[in-house]
Image (cartoon, rainbow, N blue to C red; front, side, top):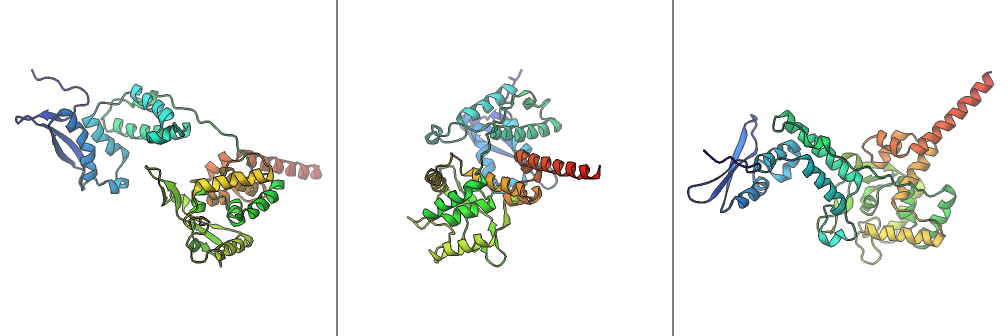
Length: 353
């Protein structure tokens, strides 16, 4: 009687010539038919490690065209060649992500793990893919159903108070950074988007800035300029005339440089970490309480909503994927507007009666 293969061995067999052969699904053709390929190795373990590399190099499943494939299709191969996922294994993975993250060892001491919200996002994606596997009868049940997902830790939102804005901007001007921080406070753009702005992104006539790229770090911790993660982040933002004037004055200091805010030392793009450091120095100059640079983005949104700008417009300017997310993020502000509306209606009804 033939020996039953253990879970995870998939379509792997030992050939008569002593080598091991594994068969895997590389994808599907236009008619929905499976594209079967094989890999060879001297050991069973070697064969198990080859399919992922083979898929990347495959013309039918090119990694550069990964957007054309679903997560479920990628997982199908994994299920055919590797052990079936269990709730326990998934839970261990979540724990590892929270504690160690996905970073290289040299960065783990400073940034040990992923946030609860990020791990929740991993869970949502994985759960959706495994649901697809259940529908296609690759699994009997979804092992992610019984997993405990980490709670999102909501950090208290802080903002610059209106009465502190002048002192903050005066301190920024003394450090020759007025244009940068003024633009941040009237647009709320992300730090990586701010430093990636180029002179060509400013439309003087239309009084807009075009956000189409961001500074981010690659897997090797190198600073690179890349396209924003979502389509909603690619946007045009209207800015006041004073912001336009300040940006023109800023560009006049370095007219041949393509960056809107180049580094004064290197002339290259300003590093996002340097912007955050400069922000902290400005706060120290003014004696204001500690705020993250990201809190300037919250300051813009809060002040805009408090002064009558509608939630949909604020959401679009921030580059959020929908107004509902903006509404949930700034509930404290929208609640204040509701209270004001209630008071207004109360005064009106009092006059009627």
